[in-house]
Length: 188
Image 1 (tube, rainbow, N blue to C red):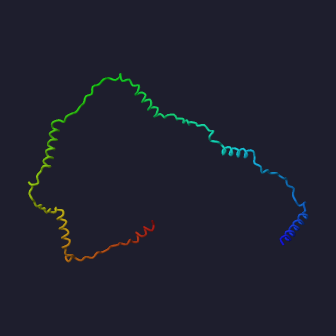
Image 2 (image 1 turned 45 degrees about the vertical axis):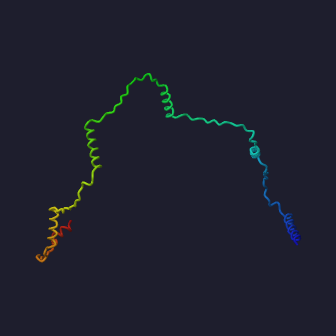
Image 3 (image 1 turned 135 degrees about the horizontal axis):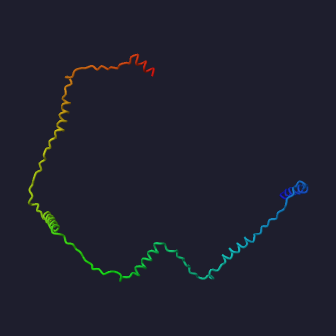
């Protein structure tokens, strides 16, 4: 059944191909494209193959030489100073005698230190057996005159008798302006 269907399809395709009108086609320039690699690509691939197949044993050992940079101003100054110290002429120096000075304290300083040391010794050697038992008495401090006056004022306020006051009436006065004042204000 499959063969019959294929024959029918191929017969239809064949009739379409033979009945096709070629005058309906447009003219087109044919450009041939080659799928072959260019010479640059081939050279690059050869280089990669040469790298992969390279024998490392054919290489020679080489020492790397590091170039030093120029010294800065501080290094130059330091080297010159060291060189000048080594070349220094000691014979141009004058001979001097060293005098050791150890000033001794004067008599008043020594007496002051002795007195201070004696006081410290007395304090350290003090016997507590010589002390007697005492009782501390606290003194009552009396207030000053200002505090007393303030307390009297507060007491007088508390003891004040309101019944001795007389009744008074307050009159509120709010004078209204007269006609001439109102007219003068309007004109302004």
